[in-house]
Image 1 (cartoon, rainbow, N blue to C red):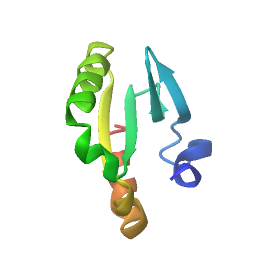
Image 2: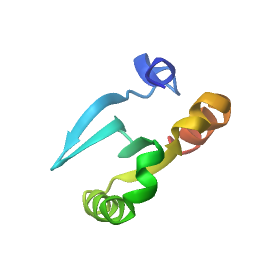
Image 3: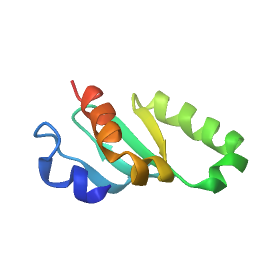
Image 4: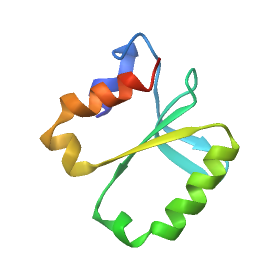
Length: 89
């Protein structure tokens, strides 16, 4: 995923990898649109309460989070990239 979003490849928008916000580390973050991209593995099925708390905190920081399953990235990267582009407008 990093190869696809780094270097302003998406609409000339800069993303950071492993970006720290408060007590959390975001997988990818675009400061210009306050957009966090999170890639979730199977372990997130058991972390719903943690993810909800994290989401609440990030919303309080005016950060929008979009989440994708790791498998989605492997199976359909083009759809993922389009969803990211749609959120960078």
